[in-house]
Length: 113
Image 1 (cartoon, one colour):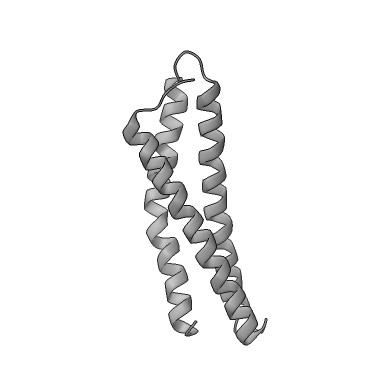
Image 2 (cartoon, rainbow, N blue to C red; image 1 turned 90 degrees about the vertical axis):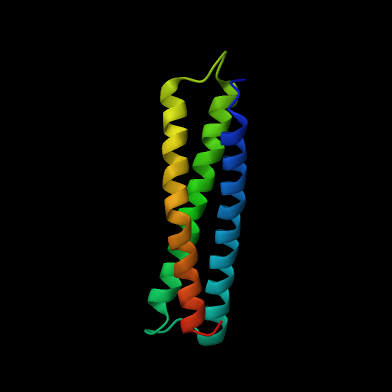
């Protein structure tokens, strides 16, 4: 198995935990908004935004898992392309996490969830 530097492995683990938190928070907010206010003209855009945040976070999580499996099968070392892709995914995720969190929080505040 191609080993990642410990810093990268720890970063991936941390990001995956954060992504799971985003998925949980967005899904919970979506459920609460729907339960309290239903699906109306006023709520539909917010429900869609929350669903999109959860889906995007889920896609990132899946991408990390897929890359980790590919790295586990790489022998004797990971290709530079694969490591470059992992770095890109890390960078993208680190940039998007605050926006996803902010989107959820703004909806929760606006609807007092």
